[in-house]
Length: 268
Image 1 (tube, rainbow, N blue to C red):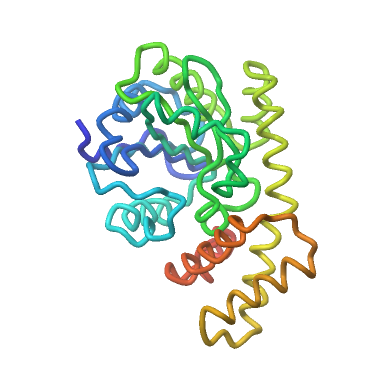
Image 2: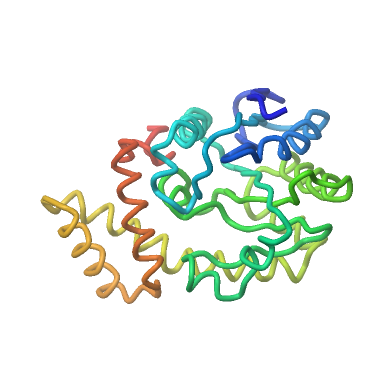
């Protein structure tokens, strides 16, 4: 349990999918059950890569330092290598963390909206904006499922149902349409989250990247000044926590030489 689990299903070409568990701490001992359950999933088009990473020190994926850690660097390497259009990041939580993960003011407190409950205590949401903005195009589908640690059979069944939808879909719109047939209210909430991201954080980050090419950034103060200029001039609705995330995302972008990291650029 918890050992690396690299496996490829399907064939290269077409839609690229990546399911990864064991992202931090000892979560891999729980997420391995979900990854193993994906072994029998049919992938009619494109491919699916399965990974379950070994135990590692716990660092939040909302912390830029995670992406400089050994495990974070390995995960980013896997993402860069496979360039997934559909990315599922699996996490597990203890019951006392449920209120923190789903709180309505989570965006104000942590810079990200509360996760949405599906069924059987399985939660869904977007991956950290620190990597969503850097490694994925706007209409990719990078998201997380949070399951109870030591997951019961019912939670695994819910995950399996969602993974089958991902394996049989080729783009974000197709996935959301299928999920909305099962979880209509939850998907309505997620669509609202996506609209907010696509109108604010995403275009702000794109503008910061472009301006950085035209600006001589000598230090962190210059970066901070640039980000605030972009936000004010674009009237982007981001809170102080999200401003810090924009800073962190840009530093990750630079660290991973991400002027070449955007998928569209890499395919040229």
